[in-house]
Structure formats: C-alpha cells, structure tokens
Image 1 (spheres, rainbow, N blue to C red):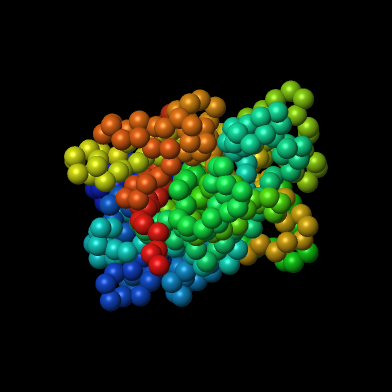
Image 2 (image 1 turned 90 degrees about the horizontal axis):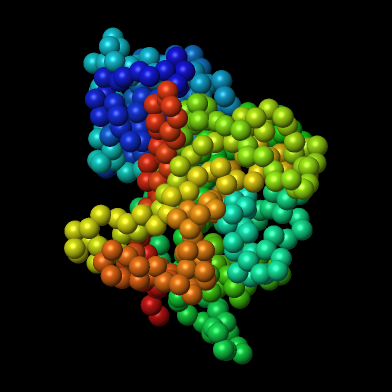
Length: 432
C-alpha cells in the first residue's frame, strides 16, 4: 500500500488536507499539558499518538519496534533502526487509518486535536551542517559581494557547507530575539556593538539523517538514500550586518547561531517518493563531479519537486485583519547538488554521521525576481525596499514581523502533500 495510492481516510479532516492527507503521515514528537513527550504522526488536523497504539495492541513486529525506539521522547532511536521498521510502521498506519478500517474505534481513542498539542523538535540534534547548494542564491549573493567573480572556483566541484550550532535549533513558533553583536556600519573606521539592523530569513530545507556510519567509513553515494530519514522546512535566520563583519576568513559564526527554526514534522522519504525527479542537467562546460559524488540513478531520481514559499505577517497586517503576504515562491529544483551528494561528501573523509543529525540545504532561490529566498537578494542588499499591501516597506525585518515558510509536493496522478508551517516572529533585542 504505497504512498501514491489515492486512498481516503476515516479521519475526515485528512481528505483534501493541504499538508497532511493519509499519503503523508509525517513523524514528530508532541506533548499535552501535564504529560510527557511522545512520538506521533500528523493526519489531517489531528495528532495520532503512536505509543497509545502500542498500548491498545494495534502494532506488532517491526512497526512496534519502531515506536518502542521512541520511548525517550525522541525519534533518534527510530531513525537509527533504518528503513525497514520505518516502512513497516507506515504500512501499518495506512491500514489503520484508511476508510473502512475495522480498527477505527480503537484508533480514534489515540487521536488528539493538533491545536491542543505542543509540537517539539522531533529528534535530539548532536550536529548540524548547513550547506550552500542553491546555485541561484549563491550566484546572486556572490554578485553582490564579487560582481566579477560570483561563484568561487570550488563551488561546482564540491558541496560547500559549514558546521552550524545545534544548540539553538528550535521548533516552529519560537520567538526570534533580535541578536546583538559587532558590526562595521558604512563610513565607520571601527566596529560598533548593538542590535542587528539587517535581520533576514533564509528559505531552506532540512534533511534528517537516519542511520549513521562508523567513524572512518564513508557513505557511498549509491547507499546514501538508506541514511536519510526525511525532510522538513528550515529558516536559517541571518544577521547580515554581523555576517558582513565576521565572515572573513572563516565564514558564518554569530550571524547565524542565534536561532534556526524548523518545522516540527519529518516528511519521510517514503512519503516523498512519488515526487522524485531527475536532477537538472549541468550547464555545458560545468565540471564532471568526482567519482564519489556521481551516481547515474541519483541523477535520474535523486532530486525532489518541492514547491516552497515565504510569507510575511507584520503587526499592521494583523491590526488591519489582513492575511500574510507572500514574498516569494521557489522550488527545490534550484539545488545544484542532490541530498545524496551532500551525504556522500560529508562522510567521504571518514566523518561519522549520527541518527538525528541535521543538514540544511542553503537558501533555495529560483532564477526569477519572485523566486528569491532571502531579503538580501530581494532588496539587493537593502538598496531597493519591498512594498507591502499595508503601504509599509521593508529592506530587512523589523520587530513584530512574522515569517512563515511552507512547502508542498504536487504531481499529476498523486495526492498532494505538504510540510506544515515553519513560523517565527521577531522580537526586540535583549535590553541592558
């Protein structure tokens, strides 16, 4: 019973749901008031408590093993089990939730309204690596910094990345406190200290690592898919003025580490399978990747067709009763390197990946003006303010602004699925 089968669910809200129809069943961690954290899947506007299914005797074998691995309130153990138990759990859930399922009365006791639940980070993240595989973003930002040489010589040879800060990863809905730090304002000879005035968002995907690898044993690109559990949305908030002062010679540091926001549901690779597609052909003259980064099957099916969008909701919009305003619509097809290439490269030196590790893709902008994944690009570094429906303008984010990321997969003959929302509202810098 695969993810492409157009089935209906007895959970009425799942049928036609924008994000969480029966064909999705993303994994997450939730809690209710006064209770501990437990593993769940999203189905329509409901949360299905997986541990409760075990208690009711509705899961057996590998499916039960998958849930038992989450009893500590984290998905790391389930991720480490690999594909088999995860698929067994998915197949059993499809049987339990499909319209006409005999187990409906017992399963219904394990459902809770999402609005009454708190959603947490789905896994304990020991390590977080942010890549830079969105070539349109890399080129456009490169032009702002180096008009004559936008892409550095290594970009098309190696998936660029840097080690991020796992301790400041937070789930959707967490407030984004404006960071403070050193900046070098235009016309100043010496740096100053204070709140960032050029706070930005970055539209990214997050990649959750499943099974890890042993230290010193690289993951072959043909096997990389076995080490990927699923995807989420990721907002890599960036203080552009702090970044401009600190990034040479070692790259991002405090300009990125104050918070990174994640959508709370892990959309599994099984749910995403119907939306795989061919990796866009490299332009003529681009170098052929080295052997460890090249796999014909990965080029044929290793990309994903995910529509991405960013919306802004200002205080004035809320006061006027206006909906959030869409700033951009992009697609994951702008990735120059596939996820499998990211995994293969990260581990080629013997680096040990662990279940629950997180990769960011880097900002995923498209080629057109309405497809840009950051304000840095939209305003060309603050030169051209954006006009909002309220008459407000923005070069960078102001206190009270809320940024909302969304992602959707559509394909003819398939039931569309989504990622839910990744939200964060900017609040004032800490005083004193």
